[in-house]
Image (cartoon, rainbow over all chains, first blue to last red):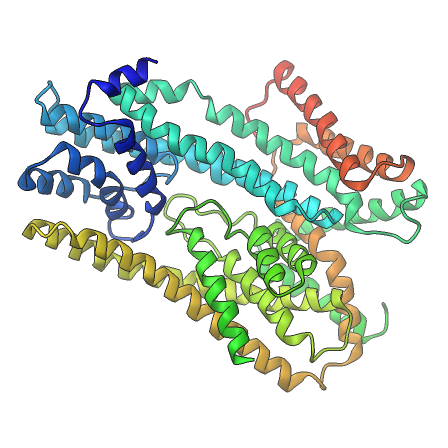
Length: 262
Length: 260
């Protein structure tokens, strides 16, 4: 209610913010090592800037401001996009916002947003959704890819859309608002849950002929798998990459096959 | 063969755009892209298994910060594409072929990673050009340079997919009669070990020993349900996850642990 009230009083309406969200799906379109996501940021914020600055010279100045170095998480950047749109709007109306405020807010939020997004989305949610889907696929459930997309994209799209609107509503106070979401705590829960998924998945790796009828046989086979896992984990301790481990294990398997041991 | 490789590469590169430059709704992840191509070429199930194996093996390669990880998405396209092309040459079992394509696709994830680094270096030039044109007052060029970046990512994915699949298919054709039958028996064993290697790789990243209890509990509970109950596999798995997930919440509430 409060949000719609604030938006209705400004030149930027909900549809303009929706356009920012829509453009932000290309946020990393020209990701580069020089200035990272600068072009993506300027591209995403462009529809709002067109509305705020009718004068071409002003718009040029604003775009040049946003073509500076920027690197954050592509989803969490939506909070920054919303907040910056609000500050640009206030700056254009001379409502007590200085140019430095815009630049500083962008720089200050870049790091924490990147860190939060990397921890929550890349290092927690995506692996958990992927392990869950991979387990379902190994069990033989065809809906696994859809489950993966559903688990990952509900929080993703929520943050992507909600972030811009929330950022716009809170402008400089957006960091306080984000703190309430407790992303780090959820990351801990998710990563712990991944271990449960791994444990529950192991008995499905080998489908033995008895149709899982014999518990003792199952226990023996899965106990052996457990030991193999621990053995491979020891190999990983040597900081080998997945390619090297695969090369090592596949070579052993092929040699065993050639020697008629298996 | 040429047209088939071309079609797989064009579609694979298009879906791969989701990885970095476009959407990022994760349709480029192996668990989605491999079954998708499998479905289009008439074998969804094989795509699903290849996707699941690659997903487990490469789950730890994350695009954190400005890191460019190994490209598991291209790996999945190469693996499933190669599977369809080499199946007629190899009269061995499906499982051995799946293990073979997963194995041969791995080096190409490194090549795709290097190609991605090149594109990102070149995109730096686009960023400079966009800035220069904005300074001149030509603001529309910004969109052009941004979309050029997307196009370059597409071109990279297409080239890597096409060259990789073509190379493997030609190699398979040349070596088809020289591979001894014993090697395929070894690959059958590797097929069983691939998900285990993946699980071990993920397991290795957990340093918090207090969670190992939950890991063992979920293992035994899952084993108990699938051997002693008549529940379908999916239900046994989900029930185990639910019970252990509940225990996890209790553990976190009463014995808070911040290290994972």
